[in-house]
Amino acid sequence: MGVRKRTTANNRKEAQKHIAFAKLTNVPTSPRKMRLVADMVRGKEVFRALGILKFSNKEAAARLEKLLKSAIANWEAKNETTAQDGMLYISTIYVNPAPMLKRLRPAPQGRGYRIRKRANHVTIIVDTIDNNVKKED
Image (cartoon, rainbow, N blue to C red; front, side):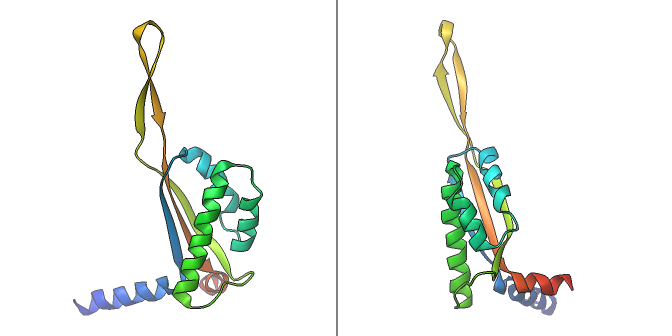
């Protein structure tokens, strides 16, 4: 490996040191419904986001809450410390569509209507708040 690639790789590893993520794939809800819940917690502090998700009456909120807890646990394992209040925030959250299941439903006069069962992939990236403040200065 050349010197340029090595230094670039080391810089990228150093930048990723304080960032942890979690992925949830093939969630059997439509991406549109999941994005409504993802928009509620985007950019929030993680414990505040957990509270929002816990008391939301959307079905997707329970799955997102579990995923956020996983991202927090990943961050704690990576940094060998526990997350305290006001320490972490959701830096990035995005919902991508997954492959659709296509089914047929019987319809009148011998026809068939298409049913599209949608699914999605969700990714949450958690970062420290003080790390974000240093970048803005």
